[in-house]
Image (cartoon, rainbow, N blue to C red; front, side, top):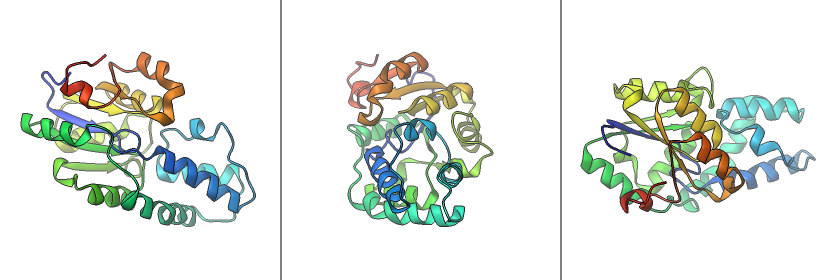
Length: 219
């Protein structure tokens, strides 16, 4: 999988860290405040959207009496404590990051999340030293499944997209990596279990956790 690669790029939520449960809880709690139940289709609809795109979608769909900045501020405040104290790394991530570092490969993060939250979880888990670049989808023209964010990370790392390996946990992210011309490995996550077969079909590889790679049992 890593043969002839020069850079490894990770999504954050559900890929590097086990946090997708948190966002479902935040959506339920947030919408309840404004008199809505969380629709069954919501998570699939907003899959891959940037933080700003998601806020705009919520404002329009639920006719929220808030500005986009107010929505994002509320979500940030609701998530920061959880990111700092309740969100762990996915199984085998630290060991795999150490392996990638030993190989001398560049590393980046390409996330749909907001910058303040990304910084909080990276600091809390002490993984910042492994990454040369962290980019959020708010910094590019379009969120996933468009390839913009992955192309930006590759450009910043000064690596050709074909020499990049992407790790993603949802179909929209996998599509973004593929559309950028990169090799993509799908990562198992409890939140996207129902999308497992779709993920397998879209990605080049599939892992249950990062020890699969270290133990040589990648699908």
